Length: 275
Ligand SMILES: [Zn+2]
Ligand SMILES: [Zn+2]
Image (tube, rainbow, N blue to C red):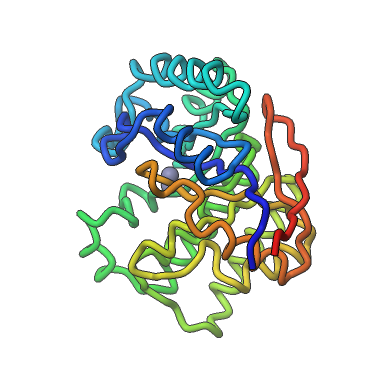
Protein backbone atom coordinates (compact mmCIF):
# COMPACT_ATOMS: atom_id res chain seq x y z
CA UNK A 1 0.00 0.00 0.00
CA UNK A 2 1.31 3.47 -0.71
CA UNK A 3 -0.03 6.80 0.38
CA UNK A 4 0.29 10.46 -0.43
CA UNK A 5 2.97 11.70 2.01
CA UNK A 6 1.71 13.38 5.19
CA UNK A 7 3.72 15.76 7.39
CA UNK A 8 6.73 14.27 9.17
CA UNK A 9 6.98 16.16 12.45
CA UNK A 10 9.89 14.59 14.24
CA UNK A 11 13.50 15.29 13.32
CA UNK A 12 16.68 16.44 14.99
CA UNK A 13 19.76 18.54 14.26
CA UNK A 14 23.36 18.14 15.42
CA UNK A 15 22.62 20.44 18.37
CA UNK A 16 21.33 17.41 20.29
CA UNK A 17 24.79 15.81 19.89
CA UNK A 18 23.47 12.60 18.36
CA UNK A 19 22.10 13.66 14.96
CA UNK A 20 23.57 14.76 11.64
CA UNK A 21 22.32 17.14 8.96
CA UNK A 22 21.31 20.77 8.86
CA UNK A 23 17.71 21.87 8.38
CA UNK A 24 18.13 22.46 4.65
CA UNK A 25 19.44 18.91 4.23
CA UNK A 26 16.31 17.59 5.98
CA UNK A 27 14.24 19.85 3.74
CA UNK A 28 15.98 18.54 0.60
CA UNK A 29 15.32 14.97 1.73
CA UNK A 30 11.67 15.79 2.37
CA UNK A 31 11.20 17.35 -1.08
CA UNK A 32 12.89 14.35 -2.66
CA UNK A 33 10.56 12.00 -0.76
CA UNK A 34 7.54 13.95 -2.02
CA UNK A 35 6.58 15.49 1.31
CA UNK A 36 4.85 18.86 1.28
CA UNK A 37 5.23 19.51 5.00
CA UNK A 38 8.00 18.86 7.50
CA UNK A 39 8.48 19.83 11.12
CA UNK A 40 11.78 20.12 12.97
CA UNK A 41 11.66 19.03 16.61
CA UNK A 42 15.10 18.96 18.14
CA UNK A 43 15.64 18.01 21.79
CA UNK A 44 14.94 21.00 23.99
CA UNK A 45 17.33 22.21 26.67
CA UNK A 46 16.61 21.35 30.28
CA UNK A 47 17.12 23.45 33.40
CA UNK A 48 20.75 23.63 34.48
CA UNK A 49 21.75 21.98 31.19
CA UNK A 50 20.58 18.64 32.66
CA UNK A 51 21.67 15.65 30.52
CA UNK A 52 23.33 18.03 28.10
CA UNK A 53 25.11 15.27 26.17
CA UNK A 54 21.73 14.43 24.59
CA UNK A 55 20.19 17.85 23.91
CA UNK A 56 20.89 21.43 22.90
CA UNK A 57 22.03 23.95 25.48
CA UNK A 58 19.76 26.81 26.43
CA UNK A 59 22.07 29.23 24.56
CA UNK A 60 21.47 27.29 21.32
CA UNK A 61 17.68 27.73 21.24
CA UNK A 62 17.62 31.00 19.33
CA UNK A 63 20.15 29.76 16.82
CA UNK A 64 18.00 26.64 16.26
CA UNK A 65 14.90 28.75 15.70
CA UNK A 66 16.75 31.04 13.29
CA UNK A 67 17.99 28.07 11.27
CA UNK A 68 14.45 26.68 10.94
CA UNK A 69 13.02 30.09 10.03
CA UNK A 70 15.73 30.65 7.46
CA UNK A 71 14.99 27.27 5.82
CA UNK A 72 11.27 28.06 5.94
CA UNK A 73 11.86 31.17 3.81
CA UNK A 74 14.25 29.42 1.47
CA UNK A 75 11.85 26.53 0.77
CA UNK A 76 8.63 28.57 0.87
CA UNK A 77 7.52 27.57 -2.63
CA UNK A 78 8.33 23.85 -2.26
CA UNK A 79 7.75 22.80 1.32
CA UNK A 80 5.94 23.96 4.43
CA UNK A 81 8.42 23.89 7.32
CA UNK A 82 7.06 23.96 10.86
CA UNK A 83 8.97 25.00 13.93
CA UNK A 84 8.66 22.39 16.63
CA UNK A 85 10.58 21.18 19.63
CA UNK A 86 10.78 17.86 21.45
CA UNK A 87 10.45 18.76 25.11
CA UNK A 88 10.79 16.34 27.99
CA UNK A 89 8.16 15.58 30.53
CA UNK A 90 10.25 15.17 33.65
CA UNK A 91 8.45 16.09 36.88
CA UNK A 92 10.07 19.08 38.55
CA UNK A 93 11.00 20.78 35.27
CA UNK A 94 7.50 21.88 34.23
CA UNK A 95 7.99 25.55 35.04
CA UNK A 96 11.15 25.76 32.96
CA UNK A 97 9.47 23.88 30.09
CA UNK A 98 6.38 26.08 30.24
CA UNK A 99 8.49 29.21 30.04
CA UNK A 100 10.55 27.78 27.18
CA UNK A 101 7.30 27.01 25.34
CA UNK A 102 5.63 30.33 26.00
CA UNK A 103 8.56 32.52 25.01
CA UNK A 104 9.16 31.07 21.53
CA UNK A 105 6.98 30.87 18.39
CA UNK A 106 6.50 27.08 18.18
CA UNK A 107 4.07 25.56 15.70
CA UNK A 108 3.88 22.51 17.97
CA UNK A 109 5.55 21.00 21.01
CA UNK A 110 6.16 17.27 21.30
CA UNK A 111 6.17 16.03 24.89
CA UNK A 112 8.30 12.95 25.39
CA UNK A 113 9.10 10.81 28.40
CA UNK A 114 12.74 9.71 28.32
CA UNK A 115 13.33 9.38 32.09
CA UNK A 116 11.89 7.42 34.97
CA UNK A 117 13.25 9.35 37.93
CA UNK A 118 16.86 10.04 37.00
CA UNK A 119 17.11 6.93 34.78
CA UNK A 120 17.26 7.64 31.06
CA UNK A 121 15.67 4.27 30.26
CA UNK A 122 16.14 4.57 26.48
CA UNK A 123 19.81 5.51 26.79
CA UNK A 124 22.09 2.65 25.66
CA UNK A 125 24.70 3.81 28.21
CA UNK A 126 22.40 2.92 31.12
CA UNK A 127 20.74 -0.19 29.71
CA UNK A 128 22.13 -2.26 32.63
CA UNK A 129 19.72 -0.47 34.98
CA UNK A 130 16.97 -2.54 33.37
CA UNK A 131 18.33 -5.49 35.40
CA UNK A 132 17.32 -3.75 38.62
CA UNK A 133 13.69 -3.31 37.51
CA UNK A 134 10.77 -5.67 37.22
CA UNK A 135 9.71 -5.03 33.61
CA UNK A 136 6.04 -4.62 34.58
CA UNK A 137 6.93 -1.95 37.12
CA UNK A 138 9.03 -0.01 34.59
CA UNK A 139 6.15 -0.09 32.11
CA UNK A 140 3.63 1.09 34.71
CA UNK A 141 5.93 3.91 35.85
CA UNK A 142 6.49 4.93 32.24
CA UNK A 143 2.82 5.01 31.21
CA UNK A 144 1.93 6.91 34.39
CA UNK A 145 4.43 9.60 33.33
CA UNK A 146 2.99 9.68 29.81
CA UNK A 147 -0.45 10.08 31.36
CA UNK A 148 0.82 12.98 33.46
CA UNK A 149 2.46 14.54 30.39
CA UNK A 150 -0.95 14.60 28.68
CA UNK A 151 -2.59 16.01 31.80
CA UNK A 152 0.08 18.73 32.11
CA UNK A 153 -1.47 20.63 29.20
CA UNK A 154 2.01 21.61 28.03
CA UNK A 155 2.19 19.61 24.83
CA UNK A 156 0.47 19.23 21.46
CA UNK A 157 1.85 15.79 20.64
CA UNK A 158 2.87 12.82 22.77
CA UNK A 159 6.16 11.53 21.30
CA UNK A 160 6.80 7.81 20.62
CA UNK A 161 4.09 6.77 23.12
CA UNK A 162 5.58 3.43 24.19
CA UNK A 163 9.31 4.19 23.99
CA UNK A 164 9.77 2.00 27.07
CA UNK A 165 9.87 -1.06 24.76
CA UNK A 166 12.87 0.27 22.78
CA UNK A 167 15.37 -2.45 23.74
CA UNK A 168 12.77 -5.23 23.58
CA UNK A 169 11.94 -5.62 27.28
CA UNK A 170 8.36 -6.90 27.39
CA UNK A 171 5.94 -7.39 30.26
CA UNK A 172 3.48 -10.31 30.05
CA UNK A 173 0.80 -9.30 27.52
CA UNK A 174 -1.94 -10.13 30.04
CA UNK A 175 -0.45 -7.93 32.78
CA UNK A 176 -3.47 -6.19 34.28
CA UNK A 177 -1.31 -3.49 35.84
CA UNK A 178 0.28 -2.56 32.51
CA UNK A 179 -3.00 -2.79 30.59
CA UNK A 180 -4.70 -0.54 33.15
CA UNK A 181 -1.82 1.95 32.97
CA UNK A 182 -2.13 2.08 29.17
CA UNK A 183 -5.90 2.58 29.38
CA UNK A 184 -5.53 5.40 31.90
CA UNK A 185 -2.87 7.04 29.75
CA UNK A 186 -5.12 6.89 26.68
CA UNK A 187 -8.11 8.24 28.61
CA UNK A 188 -5.95 11.19 29.71
CA UNK A 189 -4.77 11.79 26.13
CA UNK A 190 -8.37 11.77 24.95
CA UNK A 191 -9.56 14.08 27.72
CA UNK A 192 -6.75 16.57 27.12
CA UNK A 193 -7.31 16.31 23.34
CA UNK A 194 -3.59 15.78 22.77
CA UNK A 195 -2.35 14.16 19.56
CA UNK A 196 -0.54 10.83 19.71
CA UNK A 197 2.53 10.33 17.56
CA UNK A 198 2.81 7.22 15.42
CA UNK A 199 6.55 6.79 15.00
CA UNK A 200 8.57 4.64 12.64
CA UNK A 201 11.68 5.00 14.84
CA UNK A 202 10.96 1.78 16.73
CA UNK A 203 11.42 -0.12 13.48
CA UNK A 204 15.08 0.97 13.54
CA UNK A 205 15.60 -0.04 17.19
CA UNK A 206 16.11 -3.46 18.81
CA UNK A 207 12.35 -3.83 19.38
CA UNK A 208 11.75 -3.62 15.60
CA UNK A 209 8.22 -2.31 15.95
CA UNK A 210 6.29 0.92 15.33
CA UNK A 211 5.67 3.15 18.39
CA UNK A 212 3.10 2.68 19.78
CA UNK A 213 2.28 -1.01 19.58
CA UNK A 214 -0.72 -2.14 17.53
CA UNK A 215 -3.14 -2.54 20.40
CA UNK A 216 -2.47 1.01 21.61
CA UNK A 217 -3.13 2.35 18.09
CA UNK A 218 -6.32 0.29 17.96
CA UNK A 219 -7.62 1.50 21.33
CA UNK A 220 -6.63 5.12 20.63
CA UNK A 221 -8.49 4.94 17.31
CA UNK A 222 -11.56 3.59 19.11
CA UNK A 223 -11.41 6.53 21.49
CA UNK A 224 -11.16 9.00 18.58
CA UNK A 225 -7.67 10.19 19.54
CA UNK A 226 -5.85 12.06 16.76
CA UNK A 227 -2.46 11.01 15.38
CA UNK A 228 0.55 12.71 13.82
CA UNK A 229 3.37 10.98 12.00
CA UNK A 230 7.03 11.18 13.04
CA UNK A 231 10.11 9.40 11.73
CA UNK A 232 12.27 10.72 14.61
CA UNK A 233 14.95 11.24 11.95
CA UNK A 234 18.44 11.77 13.33
CA UNK A 235 19.82 11.96 9.79
CA UNK A 236 18.26 13.31 6.56
CA UNK A 237 18.07 9.81 5.02
CA UNK A 238 15.53 8.88 7.70
CA UNK A 239 12.99 11.56 6.73
CA UNK A 240 9.64 9.92 6.01
CA UNK A 241 11.02 6.50 6.96
CA UNK A 242 8.32 3.77 6.82
CA UNK A 243 5.55 6.36 6.57
CA UNK A 244 3.46 3.99 4.47
CA UNK A 245 3.64 1.27 7.15
CA UNK A 246 2.45 3.72 9.79
CA UNK A 247 -0.36 5.08 7.62
CA UNK A 248 -1.46 1.54 6.71
CA UNK A 249 -1.65 0.70 10.38
CA UNK A 250 -3.72 3.81 11.14
CA UNK A 251 -6.01 3.09 8.21
CA UNK A 252 -6.51 -0.53 9.33
CA UNK A 253 -8.07 0.81 12.54
CA UNK A 254 -10.33 3.27 10.76
CA UNK A 255 -8.20 6.40 11.15
CA UNK A 256 -8.79 8.63 8.11
CA UNK A 257 -6.68 11.71 8.85
CA UNK A 258 -3.52 12.93 10.56
CA UNK A 259 -2.68 16.15 12.35
CA UNK A 260 -0.91 19.27 11.12
CA UNK A 261 -0.02 22.14 13.43
CA UNK A 262 0.51 25.85 12.87
CA UNK A 263 1.12 28.16 15.81
CA UNK A 264 -0.04 25.35 18.10
CA UNK A 265 -3.43 25.04 16.36
CA UNK A 266 -4.30 21.65 14.94
CA UNK A 267 -5.92 20.96 11.60
CA UNK A 268 -6.45 17.54 10.06
CA UNK A 269 -5.17 16.23 6.73
CA UNK A 270 -6.81 13.23 5.02
CA UNK A 271 -4.86 9.99 4.61
CA UNK A 272 -5.01 9.25 0.88
CA UNK A 273 -3.95 6.08 -0.89
CA UNK A 274 -2.10 6.45 -4.15
CA UNK A 275 -2.11 2.73 -4.94
ZN1 LIG B 1 12.46 11.17 21.92
ZN1 LIG C 1 13.29 12.57 18.88
